[in-house]
Length: 317
Image 1 (cartoon, rainbow, N blue to C red):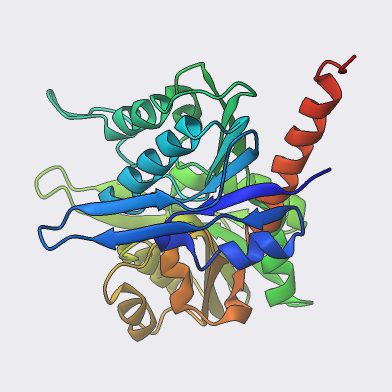
Image 2 (cartoon, rainbow, N blue to C red):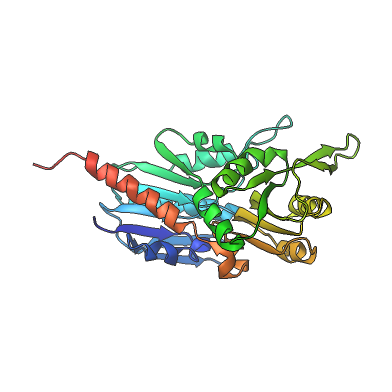
C-alpha cells in the first residue's frame, strides 16, 4: 500500500514525527507567511492530485480552526482522491449545548465549519479522539464520515506503566465522570472512586461532601478527560488526601494547561505526578516519560479505514 500524504497544521508539527514514525505517511510541505496586517498566506507545496491525503490538526485556538479549514479546502481543490482529517483535540467541546437562552453552541457551529470542506471523490472522513461528549461526533454533516476513537487503551497503558505493582484506586473528579472511570477501572482491575459535590444555591460554588470508596492508606489516580486550569482537579485531589489517601496522581486524555496552570497545579502540593496523552500542544510542558502518544492509535484507525476502502474499491479492467 502506497504511503499517504500527510499535511499538518502549524501548532501540531510537534506530533508529526510520531505519525511519520508509523511508516505509513509521507510528509507534505506547506508554505506559510504572515503579512504586516496579520493576514496569513498558505500554499500547498506537495502535489495532492490523486493522492489519499491526511490532514493532522487539533483545534485549541480559533486560528487552528481556520488553518484546518483553509488547508482542507485547498487539499480538496488540489484534486486529492480522499481526505482524512485527524483531530486529536476538538476545541469548544465543553460548549456542546445551550444552558441559557441565546448561547451559541460553538461545538456545533465548528463541526459545521469543518463539514463545509468540499468532499473528495474517494470520500472525506474526520477522526476524533476522546471527545468531552460523545454526541459531538454527530454534529458533523453526513457527507463527512466521523470516527470517534476512545483513548482507553493508551490511558490504561500509561497508568499501568506509572503505577506498576502499587495498590491504587482510580478516582474521578466528580460523579459526572463516574461512568468513564468505572470503565477504565474495570480494564485496570482496580476499584473506582468518585467525590460527591454540592453547589451552593446563593454563590454557585461547589464543595465536596463525600467520597464513595475507602481510600485510606492507598494511592489514588484521578482521571479526567481534560485538565485546563486544574481547579476542580485540585479540589478532588484534596478530598482524596483528606479521606486518607497516601498519594494522589492526575492523568488526563487532554492536557490543555493554559498559561501557568501546570505550575499552579504542582505548587498546590496535591499531586505526586501529572500525566496524559500528547493530543494537545499543552502536553509538551510535561516530561516525555509523563506522556503517551495518541499517534499510534489514530494511525492504526486510519490504516484500517484505508485498507477497507481499497478492498471495497472496484477492480480496474
